[in-house]
Length: 438
Image 1 (cartoon, rainbow, N blue to C red):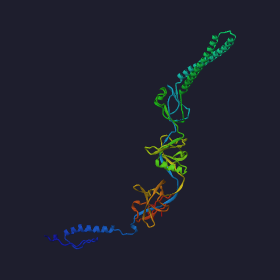
Image 2: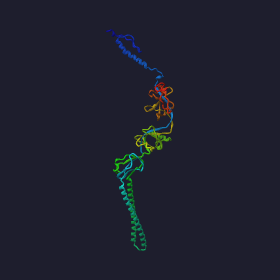
Image 3: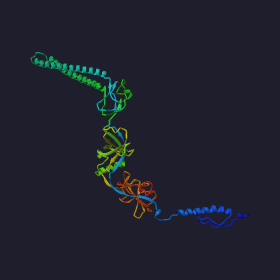
Image 4: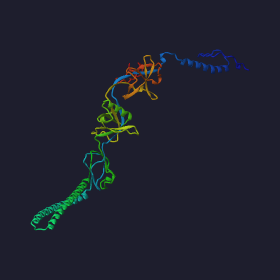
């Protein structure tokens, strides 16, 4: 066997990073490079990664003190704007459309003329019924005259009978004539009433030939079948649609929990209620392209039962629309104000954690350890969450690095500055860092 392949016992490989200096054959050198080098790298890696201990290796978190502020409860809803009144404009008499008196989409007032239907047939009918009424009234006058004459003759006959100048039969005939005359009067009166009713109907038809706006509002497009020259009737589709726009309604659904909450407030004497006391309760509205809730209105209606399928109850708010800012059908965001202001403990909403069905925060105690606190949440106001139970003002709550902290374990906490509302401010850049003025 060649000398350079003779096996020799190898010196133990040092776990240090130093390389062996004794000359070895080529095969041994290769083996040493593979085995010893790997061990050396592993040893160096372990040496670099070994924990040194001390506070510098504790989990880094940012904390902010819980604050106490005067707040006012509110709830937000999604809703739709609807017109208080929607009217389908229909013809009430048959005939040909002569004129359309409006522009599609314009605002009209109650009583404005919208369509003109050919009135000539109805005017002719009105003239005929007026003549029939005059004839019936004349017949009534004649019947009354005849009745008066019959009564006079009956009185004369009674005196002649006392003088034995006429027979009893003649007196009976005069009495029957009086009864006939009175019956003729009743028949003539009925004829007059019938003629008057026919004349009134004809006059109504003449008026119906002019289709007028029953309410004030904004009118829709004209049905193609209602164009001038077309024949229309009461059985035809609608001529157009008219919706009222002042005021405007916003309908929304409130959950069962919200209903119960405001019901409790009502029983406790608060100003808000979703029952009978809801009328006049303030509410705010914002459209899809608006920030916040710039429009103010009142709740004027709450339904009398919850929907058993959805578990929600419908409410309605009314808003002034004299400037035509709102159109029926628009999406709306609604903010219902709750009870009066009260002191509440608040912390940033991002500090809230979830453990199955529980909500919690981690508080850094005086000993520097993270403490688990189950909390009951309230309203979210500008990124700050009301803590109804489980937290005290001034306690340091972990707002950043929550995933690195564990209950009962020590942490390294940096206290952030907060704005007047209690929201943590971004940490200041160190001196000499990019963007730092100094």
